[in-house]
Image 1 (cartoon, rainbow, N blue to C red):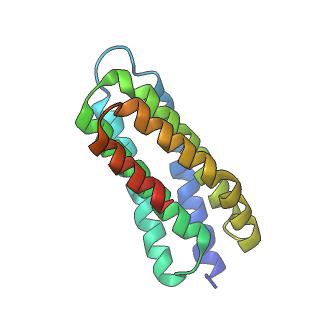
Image 2 (spheres, rainbow, N blue to C red):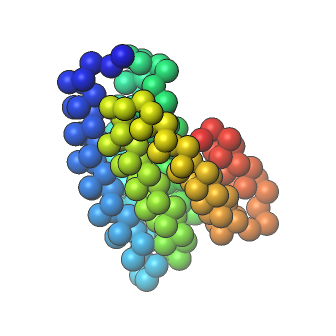
Length: 161
């Protein structure tokens, strides 16, 4: 069982990062016009990486915690998608990526809030995991229609969630 002070610190730190991520996602959603939002995408990736790193560290303390495991996997998927978005450098795709991230950040926030309750965490994950998988499959079709290699990368992410 995780120490409650450590868990609360984790929740607090992640909550602040979630606020920042929501603002960045809003900016990325609006970026279809004009230049590619490289700085915002980099900032998004750095913040999601902080959550991933913290979650993976927390897993060392409590390897069986479903909520923290879920956060580690989802944040890693977001980070991977961020790198894919950066590699594509197509501003017109940013609202599509941002739509996925907006949904994901919302789910992550729900999981973070529920971390103190094993049944609560499990309930959020069960309710929302299928939605994220569906959204990720949709993203693969939008980003890489006809590109089987890129779709395979996204499918590999799906299997990890």
